[in-house]
Amino acid sequence: MRIAIAGGHGQIARQLSTLLAQGGHEPVALIRNADQEADVAAAGATPLVIDLEHCDDSELAEALTGCDAVVFAAGSGPGSTAERKLSVDRDGAILLADAAVQAGIRRYVMLSSRGADTYDGDSDDIFQIYLRAKSEADAAVRGNDQLDWTIVRPGSLTDDSPTGKVRAGAEVEGSIPRGDVAALIATLLATGAGVGAQFEVVSGETPIAEAVAGL
Image 1 (cartoon, rainbow, N blue to C red):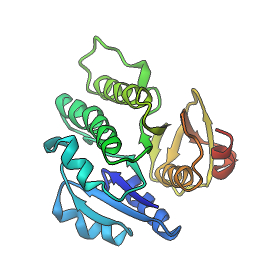
Image 2 (cartoon, rainbow, N blue to C red):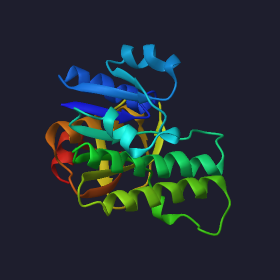
Image 3 (cartoon, rainbow, N blue to C red):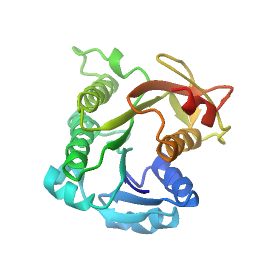
Image 4 (tube, helix red, strand yellow):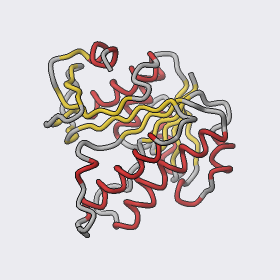
């Protein structure tokens, strides 16, 4: 499969690209900075420079031509403004969904966040706005009946070595290595499992393949 990854320079995205390439797939890393091309190529992905904050759905759809699936792994990053939490984490995800539909792509995997729906709508705290952005993006994707979507909501992300084992459910608490999140998404894409599933995931005792098969 040819798989486009929005936010292709992120830590999870690059690990995902490596796993997909090792599995015989063709990851395409959507990046907004040409200086990141070498990094994503080293991870096994084909770089594609396009800025989700400064393109429309038609332009993005054209860039996605030939892809079989998309992954939204983009994020405004630590220290970003409230406005960018909405323009990247929410609007970027919705733009990718709209463009995927235009390009005839049904498979969409969303990298979201544990507790996204618990945000305080009256708060101007930056983390609450981030959760709101994720929650609203997830809702938009869930409501798109032209997508075969899966929404992955990991707990606190760590740089620990991956264990290959997780705990998934509607609500779970804990942390998870970025490498295990990447492996989980790679398994979802390779197997086609998890369509129509939204779940939280943290480190646990269930092998990733078994957890994905049980969704």
